[in-house]
Amino acid sequence: MPATPRTIAIDGPAGAGKSTIGALVAERLGYLYLDTGAMYRAVALAASGRGIDPDDGPALGALAGEVRIAIGPPTVRDGRTYTVLLDGTDVTWAIRSADIDRTVSQVARVPAVREAMVAQQRILAGKGRVVMVGRDIGTVVLPKAERKIFLTASAAERAKRRGDELALRGEVRPRQELLHEILRRDQLDSERVVSPLKPAADATVVQTDGLSVGQALDTVLQQITRPGR
Ligand code: DC
Image 1 (cartoon, rainbow, N blue to C red):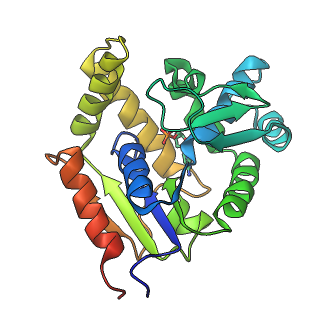
Image 2 (cartoon, rainbow, N blue to C red; image 1 turned 90 degrees about the vertical axis):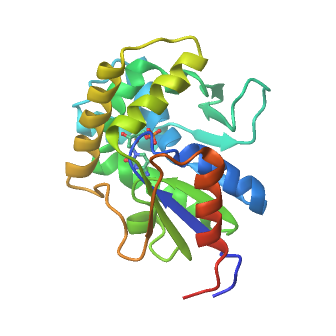
C-alpha cells in the first residue's frame, strides 16, 4: 500500500476530536476534508425549519432526497473550517445549535436519510485524496478506505471538551448536562439498526484521553503514513 492513501476514514463518537483532527490531517496532507456529521445536521435543520417531527421517518426520508447540501472551503473568516450551504443558504453555525444537537441523532437513524447521504458521500470521495469523518465511514460508506482510524475518548473527557468549545463561543452549559447529552447520543448512535457506530474490523483505535490536539494529531498521522500492512 502506498504511504499516501487515497481515502482516509475517521470515525468515532461525539466529541472525540474527529473534526479537529480530521481537518488538520487534511490540511497537512493537502486532502479534501469532509465532515459527514454536517450533512446529517443540515437535514435536521431543514426538518426543524419545515416543522417535520424528528420521529417522522417517511417525511425525513423525502426531505433528505430533496434538499441540496454543499460543503466547501470556508467563505467567511470566523473560525469555521468549512462552509455548509443548505439550498444555497449558509447554515455553517446554525447546524451547531443545541436544538440540532438534540434532534440530529433521531434524524440520522432514518434509513432513507442515510441512503441519501451515503450516496452523496461516495460521489464526493470518488476523486480520492479525501479525509472523511463520521460514524460509519470505515464500516459502510467507504469500506475499502485505505486507512481507517477510530478516534475515541471517555464520555467525561468528551463532555469537558464540548464544554470548553461552547465556552469559547460564549455559551456556558453545566458539565453534567453535557455529559448526559453525550451519553444519550452515544446510545442512539450505537444502538440504531442501520449503520451503528462501531469501529471497522480493520480500523486502528486511537484513545485520546489525556492527549493534546498536537499529540493526537501526531498519533493519527503516524498511523496514516506508516508503510502498508
Ligand atoms: O459528528 P456530529 O456530532 O456532527 O454528528 C451529528 C450526528 O450525525 C450524530 O448524531 C451522528 C450522526 N452521524 C451519523 O450517523 N453518521 C455519520 N457518518 C456522521 C454523523
